[in-house]
Amino acid sequence: MRLSDAVIFSVENIQRGGKKSFLSILAIAVGIFSVCLISGLGEAAAGEVELRVSETGLGGVTIYPHSSGQQYLISDETISSISESVKGLKAISPFVIQTGSITQRKGTSSSAIIGVNNSISKIFNIDMLYGDYFTPEQVASKAKVIIVDNTLAQSIYERDNIIGKQISVNIENIRQTFDVVGVIRSQKKGIESLAQMSLPNIIYMPYTTLNELTGNSLSDKIAISCFSSYDENSVAEEITQKLTFENQTKYVYENINGYISGLWEIIDIVKLFIKAVAAISLLVGGMGIMNCMLYTIDSRRSDIGICMALGETKRSILGRFLSESVILCSCGGLLGIALTFSAVFLLREYYGLALNIPTTTFIYSGLLSLMCGLTFGIVPAYNAAKLDPIDVIIR
Image (tube, rainbow, N blue to C red; front, side, top):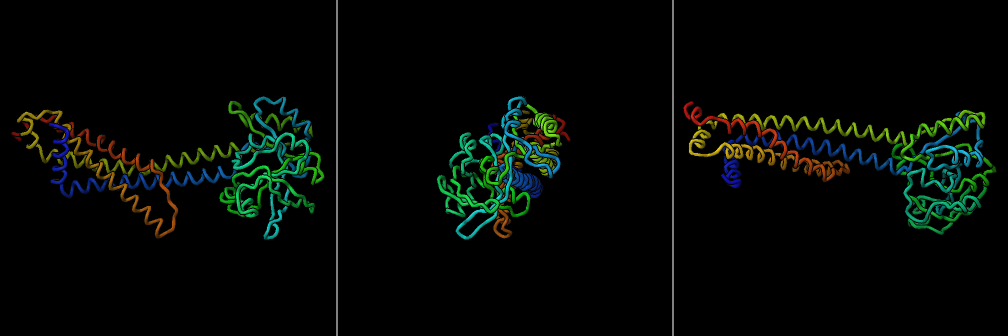
């Protein structure tokens, strides 16, 4: 029997199945709907979390005194010594934080001013949109240059690219004008969404410039990054021990990259759990298909025996019933995908939820329905093919 004949024969059998066929298709549709919607929502939620975390620009390892009362204890010479002596260290930068304000058209707004050196791009996960990071010359000369985010650029100049423009910054009642040398993607939105609180604008400037404006000559914190072949915690522990010994002050570290990696692991576990829950519905539907096919074979035993007596091969019978199972599951898969589209549309239109299920989820679900048809149809099809025509006709 040709493939086209087997498909036509299978469709006719499905139509004769009536309610049983419809219920089998509906069972698979519910399973595929669960897989699409639940796993799709899980993927979308995980993607949103990943986007928010990436928007924060957080990264690296921060090292600072254990006691908040101890400040400005790390000299440039100490930083240079650490950079040369500690293995696995990719980049190191002083890390100075100061509050200030920015003069805008609508008045002033608070800001968090972060002093760093020219290694910022190797430590933090910052996305530079326009311009560039600080140069070693700008850090050494205490240049009055800053890096701002595109949100601040929009609020002041109503455009993202403001390279070469000037912004007035007030630090400890000292107002200075700074040239913008870089515009990064806003970190504020991502941090606010995770912290669930409003934050000031974030501005980067050379730590030497910030220290000069505040009257400080040393830094109290450093930020580092390591090469991928080295353990960040081990490198950070070595540096904290050096600083503790040299300054007689206990230092501790905070591995931001470790927190982020742990978050990714949790997200992967949650995604796996969601997919497992959704797969249970599909498994139930598949068992329904198998039960339906076994009942169909039992009710058509005499027809199968006559066909085999007339010369139809076991391979042909196997193909007929297997194609019937695949068609049932494929119809259920298409119905399940259609139900998912409808559910997403209703949630968007009537509840205002911005759902965006990845296209790959629908593709995988469609392939899953085909695999379901093959998997749960092979046993009934094999049972049909191995029937003895004499025993079937006599019984």
